[in-house]
Image 1 (cartoon, helix red, strand yellow):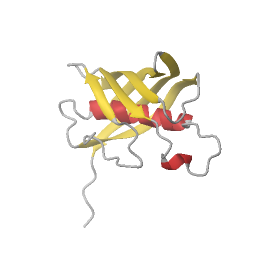
Image 2 (cartoon, helix red, strand yellow):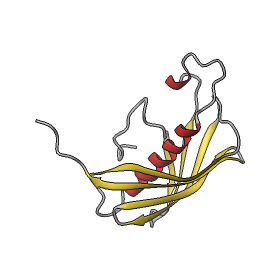
Image 3 (cartoon, one colour):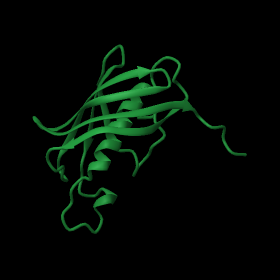
Length: 138
């Protein structure tokens, strides 16, 4: 996950499991634990839907940033084109991301699903942009 700039507590993907040679399909995981900062003070901990979408975007960007010509660049989330949340995700769940990524030059299109065990919990389609990193401030 060194490809993307996020770090704890904003890094929401624990590991990329597989990536095909063309870098168009990716499988990744997120272990949802009870000590996530977003659960602090929450009486009924449910992993928020927006966080599931952000995690999927991070997994997709990790793949896109490994494509030729994208090294050293950064990904920016652009849009959620579709999202269906089918079941709550709670501490103790392991989210499996199964994503299809389409490279469109500076843009990436992603569709796929998130699973807990064999059960699909989220379906989504989103877009992100790949841009050069800004120079470091003096």
